[in-house]
Structures are given as C-alpha cells and as structure tokens.
Image (cartoon, rainbow, N blue to C red; front, top):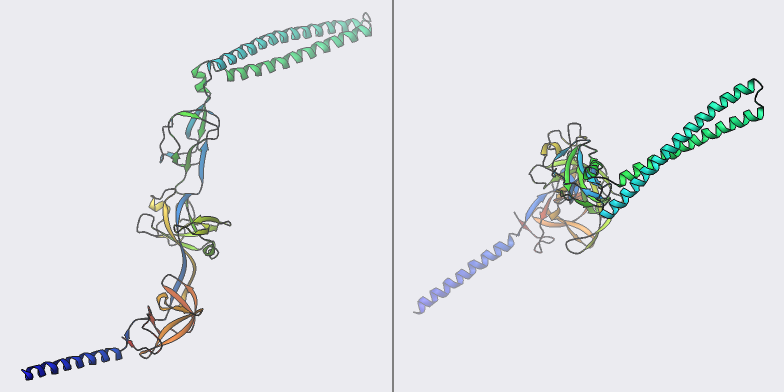
Length: 406
C-alpha cells in the first residue's frame, strides 16, 4: 500500500518537472511575431471619396408664358435632335366676361378702322383736287391773268391737303395695329387659340433626362417642364475634406470604381472648386468639404481620351446616367522608387515615429522619419535601409531586447 503511494508521488514529481522544463524552454525561445522587409518600391498616395455623375451641358426648359401645357407624349430616355418640338403651351382660355369685353374692343377697333379708312380716302381726294387746282392757277399766273398772291394761296392749299392725307394714312395704320391687338386678345374660336400656341424646341442633340409631369395642365411662366442632356458628355463630382482638397491639382489621375461593374475607369481632375461648403457627416460632425470635378475618358470625337487606350470609357460602358453614384480614388502623389514599410509596423511615441527592427534574433527600437503614406505603406525618409526587417503589428510583449521566434 505504501509502496504504491510512493510510486504515485514520484510520478507526480516527474510530471511537474517535465512541465517546468517545457515552460522554461518555451520562454527562452522568444516571442512569435510577423516580420516585414523595408524595400524600394512604387508608392502612391490617394484621396478617396464618393461622388456622382453629372451631365456637363444640362438644359432646363421652363414655360415661356403662363398658359395651358399640352400633354407631353415623349418619355425620359427618348432621343432628341436640334429643333425637335419638346412641348407646346397655349394661351389660357378666357372667361365669358373677358371674352365679351375682348370682342367688344375688337368691334370698336374695326369700326374705328373703317371710319379712318374713309377719312383717308376723303383726304386723298381733297389732296388730288387741290393739286389739280394748283396746276390751273399756275397756268393762269403764267399768262398774267392770276396775281402772285392768288397763286401762293393755291400752293398753300395744296400743301395743307397733302399733310391732311399723310395724317389720315398714319391714323389708319394706328387703327390697323389696334385691330390686330384686339384680335390677339379676342380669339374667336378654340381653333384660333390652338393656332396661337408656343412650341418650345430642343437646342442640342441628346436625350430627355426627366420630365416634371407629362400630363396636360395649367402652368405659370418660368415653371420647370423638362430637362435634356447628352450622356456622352458626363463628368463626376466628388466632395472631399478641404484639407485633402489642397493636395489635389488639375490633371491628377482618378480611378473610378463601384459604378456597377468590376471594371475601373481612369479619369482626370479638371478643376477644384474654389469655395467650400459645410456638410454634416454620418457621425454628426460638421465638415468643410470641396467639390472636385473629374473628366471621364471618351472617344469618337466626343472629348479627349484619358489613360490607356484599352480602358473602359463612357461611350463603351453606355450604362452610366446622370446622378449615378461612384467611388473615386484621386492620386495626389506617386514615386517609383520609395523606401517603404507597412503602415502596421510603425507606431508613435512622444511625438516621434518608431519601428522595431531585428538585430540578429533580438528586437531593437528604431526611430524613423516618415514621408508620404498610403492605406498600406509608409515612406521612410531616414532611419532604415532597404532589406532591414521590421516587426508588423507590434504588441505589448515586444520590447527592446526581446527575442523573436521565427
């Protein structure tokens, strides 16, 4: 019985010793860590943002007059050419009282015209008679039968009759204008009203982007009716933080993705808007943002092609419309020969940047000076050389002099 207990105690002591040896051996072999190598490679820094497509030349057509808009048969997406009729507006129908007043004014204008026309005819006849009398008086004066005073009176009478004729002609023209004005205000039938409508026509080739309401209805002057534009002339507007906007320059390349297909489109920055605007983020933070306007590559004479000749273009895709959402990555700096390490390898202490480098099998804390950074890589200006190994994702277990287990 006692011998059996002694063997169990001895077995337990041996097991504890083995465990202690294993623990000591494990601690002596160091800490496991993921390593990376500082290397000369290409590096790009970008500004990312969400944007939307926009038609470069968008035409908004409004009602030129207040009146009755006839039903628009066309639909959004229909093609339009220069000169095509877009919509028609008729003068508003008059009330019965207004129609009666307008008709009375028209009758009065017509009566006035007839009266002045007869007065003009009388004035013309009197002027012609005065001219004939003047010719006879001149013949008598040549034979010394008529005194110079009587000839002068005949000449004055003829001139006065001519002026009365001219005055009657002017009054008749004014009366004719009054008649036409009264006729315009007093449409005598629905056919006359239909004939006096205003047709608004397209000024550029493209498509109908949107129609406010296709139904026939009464509209006010200046009310928006429809919009047209050319989807072969698209641009992209991306809003970025103002501190990022100062790094962006016209001509910077932009990679467009997330527009509905796996293909990427390469465009370029046309301009940076000079004024910022305030926008609240999803977290409720007030931000100053700036619009960046980006040109898309196009072909077939529509615009200048950007980027490689085999990349997708607006013409090739044929599916981008106005107001579509896209993701944009704007390149603000690039280098083909930058010394880089993973961003996950650097950490900041006391206002400086550090990495853990490998000196043999042990870790050394090394201060570095960083330059540009991307989402994955950081440029090292000093403190490291190409080929140096650094620790990625340094944890609290890693410190100066710690052995790294490979």
